[in-house]
Length: 251
Ligand SMILES: Nc1ncnc2c1ncn2[C@@H]1O[C@H](COP(=O)(O)OP(=O)(O)OP(=O)(O)O)[C@@H](O)[C@H]1O
Image (cartoon, rainbow, N blue to C red; front, side, top):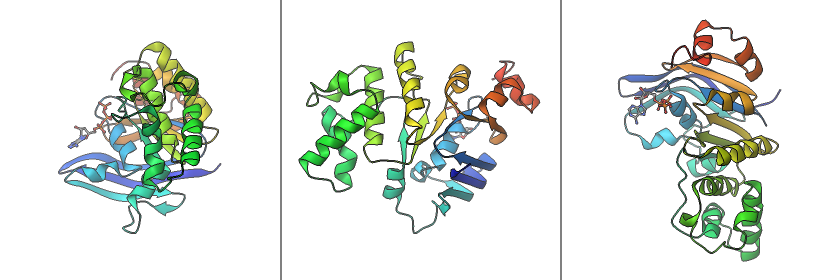
């Protein structure tokens, strides 16, 4: 099976505090990988190492390797804007820009030099369709994105991420601020997205991880305790600590 991303002996420190310890994980292409574990175990930190979002934080030290199709993304030669085009991110709280729905989606493509109106129109439509939002907004593309519901805003953020044709989509608790119906729509959407993209999702929701992911990684105080096929992880975890966590005995 093909891996698209891989971390090798990855350690991360915030100053003197080690937040990731020796993480070795191979992320399978066109699959959904869920990252689970109690609060503060390093899930978000790990996710952010995959497109260098931690670069923005002071006093961060990273050791080891993060490979995207075999290339180390921390190599000084790597163009971080290009990296984030290939590895997009969706955050916990929907964060549309205070501009129109159209301009939100066209934002990334414009940064990457696409100016032709017809080309942008097409990208906006395909991305909104890809995020299962087109039908709801096609008659109000020029209206502010701030007028959308929370669930629609989150799908808009997904459309914005898709508009630059990423290979990998990182999602940090993308449904935790949403109601159950919006959550269900985004879960369905993620399952569709893996046809074209590889998805990594941080979630606190055990049922969500079990429902949508193909592989699950369980983190505990900076270590990856177990990484397995999701079905296996939830039916026959091999580590006692994983079992305690998924059965709700701690965390
Ligand atoms: N910017 C930062 N500066 C210093 N320490 C940080 C920073 N961000 C996170 N940490 C620390 O790193 C550890 C891992 O945090 P992280 O946010 O990755 O955990 P998490 O598993 O995603 O938690 P949660 O589920 O609560 O979001 C924690 O001890 C946290 O306090």
